[in-house]
Length: 487
Image (cartoon, rainbow, N blue to C red; front, side, top):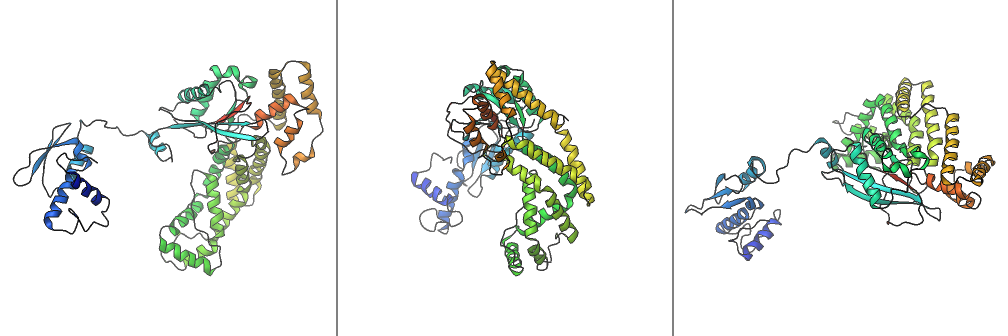
């Protein structure tokens, strides 16, 4: 708070009390509201003279009528003030009219405006770096390595430079195994910069497994295209949820309707449209609350958003079709267990589900499947068959083993592993792949090290909770940037 030099400590104390009790003014003491008019004038004068804006103006000589001049410290504009005038005109001049005021900001660019909506970004871009690895006890670990401002423009080159400086600072530049990123042109450019720079020299298999695409982001892009087919129906459900939560009176009436039809007491909630899994949860909740919503429509004549029977049926059919996508998203988002080993089987199931939509008896599901398949094809790096993919995996394993050690026993270890019969326990739902590899370390010492590198890589850029920054005997790290920063 800016204070006038002529004010006494007693007056300053009164101003602070008044300023903190504007809703319940003080009724005792000098300067309190409700006292004699003369006291009110003194209090008003003290408030005017101690406003923050006076740091930017100089007070002139007080005239006989109580008026005085206020001169802008930067441009010299003069305002005539009086006991009955506030500081609104001065504040407006400083914030809007003064062309010479210091630290005058230009209009923030679109990126800054977008990042202002984030919980921690403020009006600047930030980049977080999280390291994933498996320790000697075969437990998956993760930690926030760094969280730093990222100056604009957020081009691939700038992102790559910021990322590489983080790795060097933490002495991780020679220990990176992979980088998991969302699909974005700036992120693709970042990968190219890193692969063409110093980082490539220390990457496994010449960097061919360095770039991993976020599984959840791919699913989100695919499903969002499908959801556009039922845009109107989903919007009606979303607006219904917002309508019911708009006021306390509506919520109380809705709770009454829910009790009358014996629906569980759950509060309506709407989604974040850019995150399809939140849309899925909103629709799931709406279906559970459907009897209460229909009952509420009879109690509120102003409510006109209720979906009809056809729309409710369409939503239910949509939910049945997207269940497998939601399950895959949950699995990819796990942080307490390895997720990269789930990538291939889950995506196979998703692919089969999309193809099955083409034979659905519902025309909108057929159209949705067509849109989703087109988006799916655009997000695949190649159109190779599963047999080709498996062959490439085997070739990659051999190449990686050659990087580790070039002697003959290593090759026989790989061939021995590939020739072993399938362990049927691996097909069980509760199979612990880390525990399995922990037991196989004496038998496959080199391959188990490879498994530690691969299984540490997350399948998605899900946000991680901060962890203690500590390192054990770490050879490689799965590293990802959880915040996508578009150009």
